[in-house]
Image 1 (cartoon, rainbow, N blue to C red):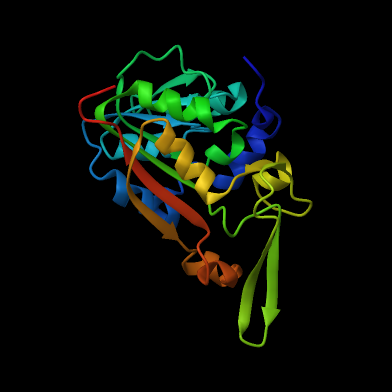
Image 2: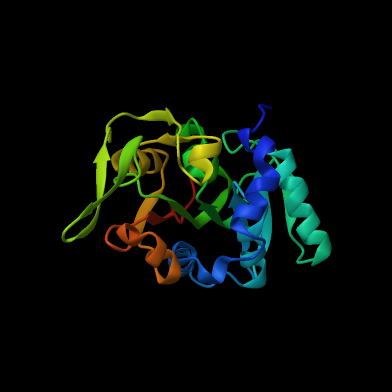
Length: 244
């Protein structure tokens, strides 16, 4: 199993996102609208990191399994679980190879701001289809691929801040020289919107709904351009109700 780039920045990331900051995250509020009620469902948090999404899902009543490649992030997630047990199981596995997870295990899979960290989406999509039960759902949130590209930025104008975008069609790994978040620490993989959606459709998932989320509140005051254009893209898919 390959190493995760997040192993070297796990403590920084835990401090950066905070232990339980989901109530104020507009992207996760949009995710909750697309997942619907999760109470009683068995849900996989794919790319769970230090577990804040897993904890939120568990607080909403889901039976959660968090999956991540980073052993250091999982260690932090397990410490949070030990401090306040919620019944979350954490599994060390590569999202591109979920062979340790049995077929049709989950009612739903959530992948919150993690697909951009994965080099190859095709095996991820196929694995999601396999581990979902017939009629199960998959919801992902990603940084919006149309506005967060390898060459993008912010520009003040007399009419207000605007987002500048270039290199949209240049798919692949990139790293920001001045980004305060993960793109500046470990980099990310840029893909076009069509690549994200078509990869999921070709794996057998059925697109049900798409949502786009801007920043709000104090976060929007600090970065006003992200109130003008969406910072995240959220999508919900389901599997065939009759199975493969």
